[in-house]
Amino acid sequence: MKKSRLIARQPDLMNRKTEKLIPWGTLIGLALIWEGSVRMTHAPQWLLPAPSRIIHTLWETRTLIGMHTAPTVIESLAGLAIAVLIGTLAASCMEWSPLARRALYPLLVATQTIPTIALAPLFAVWFGFGMGAKIVVIALVCFFPLAVSLADGLRSADRDALKVVRTMGATRLQLFQKVKLPSSLPSFFSGLRIAASHSVLGAVVAEWFGAERGLGIFLVRAAKSYAIDRVFAAIVVISALTLLSVWCVDRIARLVIPWHYRNRLSA
Image: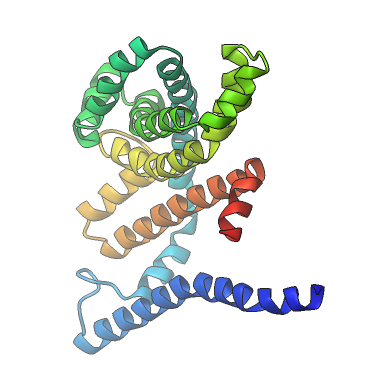
């Protein structure tokens, strides 16, 4: 019996491994096409550098890029942490009080109608050109997906489970702690993945409007000097940081809510 189950699971394992390799294969294929096109057309390096040139630039400027990467990472993490705290409080308030939901939800939506690139210079004027202004921008960018995802997750708690716990004499706080909060964790981590990706991009945009160090200012300086290979190198690092942040959130989610992933695999 066990042997037959193992044999049945082998194709599924192979399919999962193949699915993981497909994005890497696609990326390598596109890079090869890009490299070949640049070499065949003899495109100038200042216009469109080949992937091999970008890799060379990454290695050549690794110390400089590392120096600019550190502030961006710190700003992203700080802004994301503040957004998690405020977003959790806002979502909890909206779940606890219908009045708070009617008051706060329109404001949450309104924050998304204002582009980040318009807020960054305002915060620079109000809070200065230090790290604090950038963290505020990042927190605002990350706040919406976190708060809305968690609020929706809290509202979509299993009604049957709520009824059972109510019949056992649970208080409103116990209902929140024992049923609503655990059932909202998948939604929370979905919002956190989006917020984590936005945190890096928010930091880069905030650095455009005043910073001594950071990938955003590195990108601006490279573009102004027509060092397009450095521009692409910065884009590669920004993309890598974004993917890494999303991957870290996914790893944490698998540790915190393993039952959610087991249910998905068995479905």
